[in-house]
Length: 256
Image (cartoon, rainbow, N blue to C red):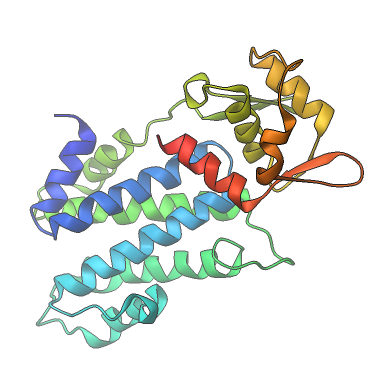
């Protein structure tokens, strides 16, 4: 049994099993984006992690979730603190400490671009580093709680750390040259889409894109640029930006 399975099994012994896979997957997704230096996506993943944690604790207290459009993670984390009494949930780490951590992360993801388009404030490495540390602490506390506190805090942290050991990133940038992990693409078109995805939200000069695709082993002489048309926007200076449909395509390539 690997450590990821161990974490899921430990949490499932105490909490709703149907929610555990989602929580761990959001956590690992945030870790992956953090490793890749994609701070905005990391904050989005950590925001989803927090939402799943709040839902987990709310239902653990015997409460019913509202309709999806009515659920706000920050609001319901505060409800856990204010409305769930010690008789219903005597464990301070679940009733107080973890919800407070969730509120803190939710505030960062809401106000630093992770969840809203706030032009004047951009998500940065410091936000992501803090968010990643708190997400790890939350998951470790849930693991420790689920073992009836048989694990010391450092043991729970060690178990969580073991499933987040650094993996090879999907994208690598060396002196402005973008490289994509080889098993993520099969064609020159897919490679081009992933390169543009890695450079988003910045534009890339079309000649530089061509050079980058060739660097991945493809011959561009016969490449059909029109196949990219509905995925990209090209400005008057021949700089390319991946549109929303292109980003959706890239996400599918990365998840297959």
